[in-house]
Every structure is written in structure tokens, then in C-alpha cells.
Length: 116
Image 1 (cartoon, rainbow, N blue to C red):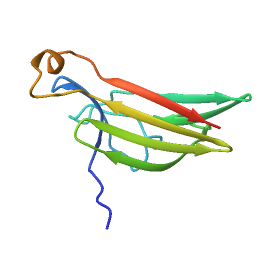
Image 2 (image 1 turned 90 degrees about the vertical axis):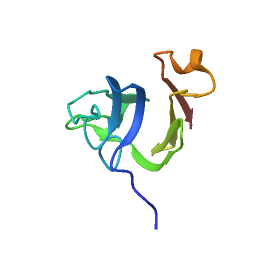
Image 3 (image 1 turned 180 degrees about the horizontal axis):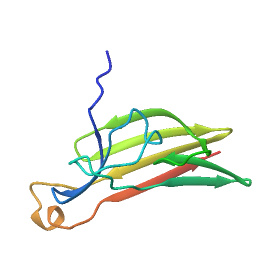
Image 4 (image 1 turned 135 degrees about the vertical axis):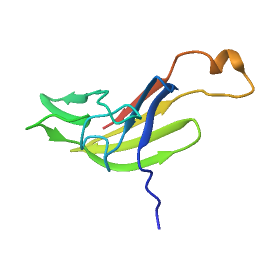
């Protein structure tokens, strides 16, 4: 049985600034703050004149199909497909307890890899 988190961490700077996905897929609804208030980010991939939604919510837009989501201590990795394209998104918040300089930086990273 695969466990499902009640919300998926995307950007986790501190309790005052964080963005989560509370949907089963990243493109099934708006992203939110941990309190449940909207904190929307929209992600659209445009290729060969076609637009595909991979993050957030937009009506009447083609959606990429989410094929995987992995959550680790410091990263969340999503994989999507559409037509002949594969998109991998890695959200990373380097909250290293043994390095206070890195932990105190108000930074999260988003790495996108596209194959097609």
C-alpha cells in the first residue's frame, strides 16, 4: 500500500512562508499555505505551440499527466508526461540542521528537467 501525504511540501522556508499542494496531483488545484489559504503558483509548459498545465489550476487547459511523486526529507520530486515529453520537477529546501548558515537562508530551489 502506497501512503499518501495529506499535503505535499513544495517550498518550505519557515512557518510564515511555505507552499504546499493539497491535491492528489500538482495540477488538480491551487497551491496553498499550510494554513489552507491560497498561495498560488501556476506552471505551464509550452512546446510546439501547445500549452500544458503541470502546476496549479487553469480552466480549459490541457494538463500533463502526473506519473509519480516522491517526498524525501528535503525534496519533493514530481514526474509528468504529455505527448512525447517527460517533465521532472524537484523542489528542494536545504534545511540542514548541522549548517545554520544554509538553514537560515530564505531559499528553496526548483529544478526542472525536460526530456522529449
